[in-house]
Image (cartoon, rainbow, N blue to C red; front, side, top):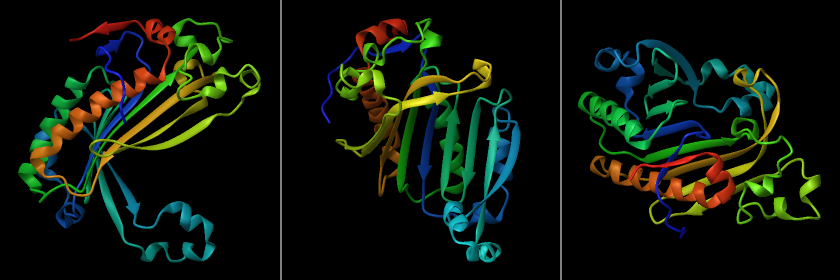
Length: 266
């Protein structure tokens, strides 16, 4: 994938609604069979709220499709996910037997996210010493809502979304009639791939007074597999971050870019 170089910016009116970083590693049974006391002690001042959840090896959607499986659920192996949450509930760290995940709805810039994740990964590697990683993932979700940008509710999406990724929105024959638009792409990168899903959605949340509003969602899930050595983590994540910024900027119009009030950081 070859994208133009753009000046790196952060947006005053950021569209980011969630960022997730994840490391997957060969199963460490110790995590499943023993609560992570030492790990919690090292990170609990940043993530003081603790919760557990149970997951099954069988996908729940499959179990629900076959009634007979319901009676077998108790026989399916389960594993525990340990969740550590920040005091303001905007950051969550999750650990289970085969992955370590950091997610936030309060992302401001990559360097801040990276600093937090480095600290967590260092603690994890000191305690559990994984041999290597089998998958790295960095996921960005951006939601464009016209109301947050003080735009008219009937502002055409063609003024905001690039024709390069959604030509239908720029069609005089189609644009006024489109009610659903979903695009799913898997794109090969120099290192790894990205699952790039985008399209029209209906957003509803407390911040909007539970009022439904049409929006445009960009969901870019960058990943690399199968084997990544521990010393290669940040080369991969840094590259994902740079590519993610370029992909988002390439996907929007200059008008939307300006409306979000970009601020140079380099």
